[in-house]
Amino acid sequence: MSTPRLRVLLVGAGGVIGRWVHQALANDCTVITAGLDDAQHQVNLTDVASIQTLLQAVHSKGGPLDAVISTAGRASFARLADIDAADGEQSTYNLGLQDKLMGQVNLALAARAVLKPGGVIVLTTGTTSREPIIGGSSLSMVNGALECWVRAAATELGSGLRLNAVSPSLVEGTSAAACAAFPGFAPVSGAQVGLAYVRCLRSGLTGQIVIV
Ligand SMILES: NC(=O)c1ccc[n+]([C@@H]2O[C@H](COP(=O)([O-])OP(=O)(O)OC[C@H]3O[C@@H](n4cnc5c(N)ncnc54)[C@H](OP(=O)(O)O)[C@@H]3O)[C@@H](O)[C@H]2O)c1
Image 1 (cartoon, protein in one colour):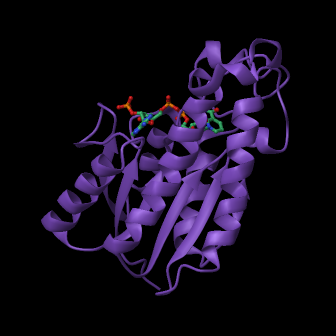
Image 2: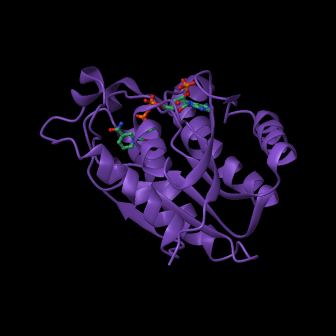
């Protein structure tokens, strides 16, 4: 059985995970890359107009997509002792809520308009939804919310569209500074992480959180 070639938009392609995913898809997908700077297309997930501009540009050049993948999304590290309810809009939580959570949710919502029937959306969460780290309450909150949203939203997508998330542990190739926030975690293979996104695209899964 031959594998159909898929046209995939990869947001966050220049990052640690994005590069592993690009490598995993390179043989049998046409990958269109997007990111803040380091990609074919620039997009800021915190800005809905920027997401729409990206999707329209990609659609107008080559028609509907088979898949939209996000390996993007920022959140801040901060110890709970340094977070105060009075921080309001300056809260350390805001970056994760606006960027990693709502950025990916808005990308998924907007992607419905440019996907073929049966198309796939894959988002990225992370291990802190299950395994807390010190200073990681923002990441835990955002990853947990995103995973719940994926399970719920997948049931309502229609048009045969599918929605999944990959939830990696610490990934091979992550900077030493970021690894230091995860004491006792052994990095997981980047190739395995890439394959988790392939499973989300190719194996018919929907509403699933694929843990690596
Ligand atoms: N690395 C890990 O061990 C690990 C483990 C589990 C989960 N995660 C999660 O996976 C995601 C990616 O991690 P990573 O380590 O690959 O990060 P990374 O190396 O910092 O790469 C992030 C990528 O996302 C893009 N990006 C960031 N903010 C964006 C925005 N607002 N709009 C559009 N693009 C944006 C960046 O674009 P530019 O390249 O142009 O800057 C970059 O390509 C993060 O949400 C992280 O929490 C990471």
